[in-house]
Length: 243
Image 1 (cartoon, rainbow, N blue to C red):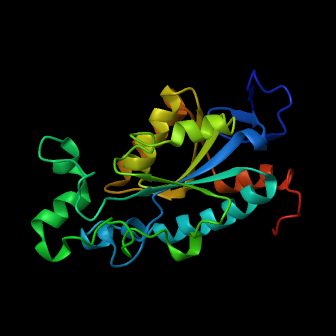
Image 2: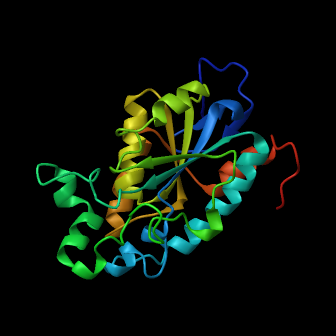
């Protein structure tokens, strides 16, 4: 299989098998970006579940993330959480002049179902919380966002630049919405986006997932699997990782 080496990283320390080519990268310049692994999108009784969206794939994604995050931390890869959130007064959710007001699921559901008002994606609510299995650790970076992309009106880019991060491994939900939006913005900002396809869950028909993965494999980045990332990270772990 072919390899692409980051031209700025002659000291690349690990190689990840991916489509369309393998990637060589340095752990210290790599971050794993966990997108919106919140009760809203991954737990029974959360916003997606209440909307009738199939969350059956969330359990597999959570398990994959648990293994990936353990390996990433031990190998010196930065861990970044993105967390979709609104203030209780919804002042950062957009007014009727904003497309977010009309299209973002939480905003729509809270208008259409008054009993849900103040419950979906609101700061410090259960729906807003990262799932228990993936709680951030003290050294992890948590970025609050109020739009699909983690780069929109946040300090994500500045935080990554300050750490000299170049490569981004993406996990989370939804593959075709917030992961897609953030990874596209990463590409346009000269980061290297790598989607870990089985550490994500999508919304809607499976062709949504397939479309996102096709776009990144062929035009916007790279696609890999949990097992390939773990194989690469184990080789660099300071402490041996469990099999």
